[in-house]
Image (tube, rainbow, N blue to C red):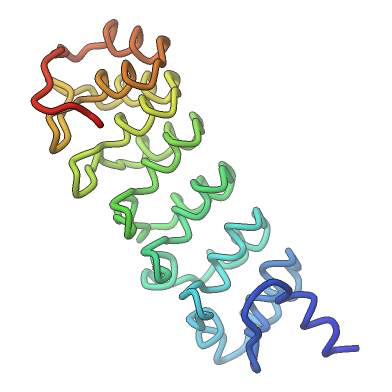
Length: 224
């Protein structure tokens, strides 16, 4: 029976001889089990355990939308644990933004040691993912918590991401709270307006043109 249970919990993943019990409870949303495990003297050992993808129990709680479990973790979570990155550079906060778990993102932002501006292997930050998904409330929460418009290695900011994906409300939220003297360009010389135009996102074009930042229509290189 126990073997069958464990197999169902790791179905579709590479099997592990010793699956982390904290990760199993976190993924399934069993807050009481997580609370019991977190009271163990060696609880931090389970908090730090990663699987083959480099993910911790907190990563899985965020990905699965288990807000109660995340809340339980945050009671005694270290700076290292709350900002742990998997093999793709994804933090728990990024996981919450990637899967549009607004409540969980807000919980994580309440941690005093949360790092809001980490870049993953693609160069994206939590704010990039929130903008890509059109999660306006999380965008506002990130900006309110001090998240910066960090660019990728190609110089693309969260504004580029929102413009490309067609999320004008995210653009508006950023410009209201973090207005710049001008829209920054990526390494090709394209700013968010170019991205919005190229993608055919008229609402984003209007938002950028009516925003506080002066825009330029000049681009050094083509986008394709």
